[in-house]
Image (cartoon, rainbow, N blue to C red; front, top):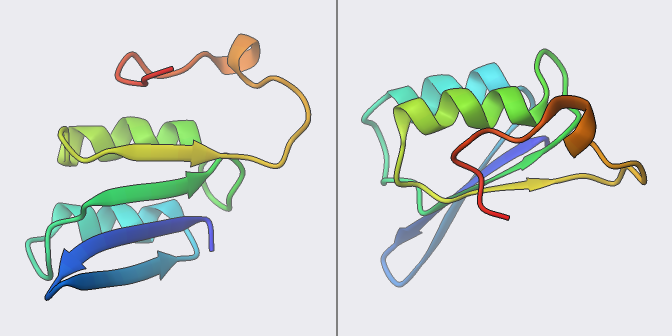
Length: 88
């Protein structure tokens, strides 16, 4: 799944996977369920790429850590640049 959200609940973790970034953004915009502890997203996914997703997700959850992963061998950074909130 392109986006996975991990939340701490009852001495364990709740893991929610989404097939599209838009679905995960709707979840992050809501107040249902536990607060996300970390969000992991793929660079390439249907509908929007991971950089666009993180940019929008950081508006909704500015203090939630976001991890961007990819299996691509090329460097994506010179092509698009990273959002200003990204930690390198």
